[in-house]
Length: 300
Image 1 (tube, rainbow, N blue to C red):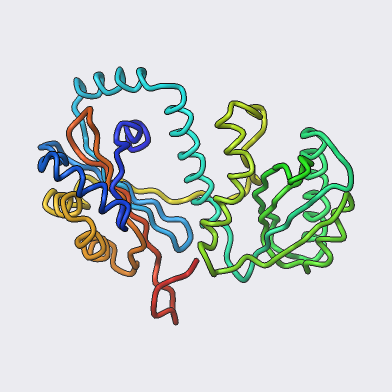
Image 2 (spheres, helix red, strand yellow):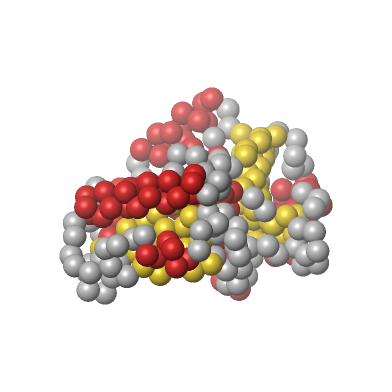
């Protein structure tokens, strides 16, 4: 249900200056612009590594669901494409968080000395992973896990970005490529960390896909043994009173309410969506598990 109706709640109010300005504009024109509604709400909790995402969304009756499904069919192709891209990007972020760790795992950039086509690049990547997998087995290391994306450089040559688990030296992995320059770096905690890396991988194809190009390219792909994020839904996790406080005063209330709802996690950000089509609000918050010896609870 969360994915089903997310696209209908697309007016965004975020914590931060931009979202505050948007909210102020709505309130100037219509104080009741945010409509929490009288329906019930469901909370979907997604855990991926130290990352926690909480989605709060309204529960509609069958008649309302029919009307909403009909409304979805009227969305423009551009809107549908953008919603699909956002879903795929979030999926990639969660997989990255669930499977890799900063200061432990690696980001590799694999380039070519000459021009190759997409099919050749995918074939070379698969062969490269087979070689790395055999070496890991030989040394008794954990099974290889990876996520890759293929993009174009400034000269429009294909190159690949790969995130994989560590255990083999960077120099060895670079020598094993054999088709051009390879550069291996340790995943870092600074900046936006794993989320930033996931966005970077996805951007390899996002711009071209929005133009309608490269639709036969995979935005990204990963090994079959990737750990999946854990999900749980509850119809009683968030009270209507808390939902109203976040919807009407998210800048001041979201952090307090979310950290009280999820003890052991520190608040990072929150976004509130509302719709011109239906009553109700859609809330998404991102939190980070407080790790041992980490006073700020920040582990990227």
